[in-house]
Image (cartoon, rainbow, N blue to C red; front, top):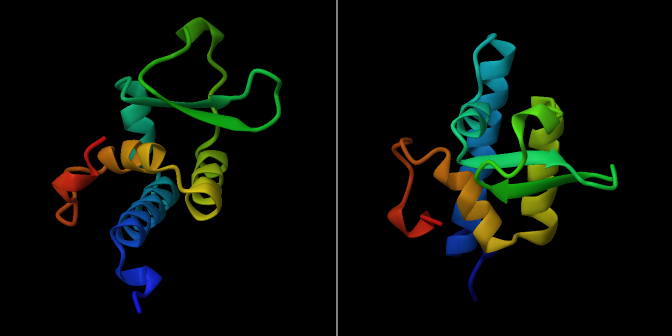
Length: 112
């Protein structure tokens, strides 16, 4: 029997959840989280849904900066945790993981 913790999906989820926790620590220390840095560089975007109900994750800079309403980091982190735990869309999780590819635990098979 395979334990969920031993699957590639579980390892990817654990990696991303651990990096989000590290980013939360960065915020507490007054530092810019790597997730926010990735957004600034246009690697991904976490934005409010068009109908105002929830958040969306998209690859790349998908909205004009003038139209951008930044999402607070705590809200983004909670949204991403729910997405990972409840839905686990592999493409989305790999996109998030790619933000942290400089981390020593990163694996090339997680590349989006």
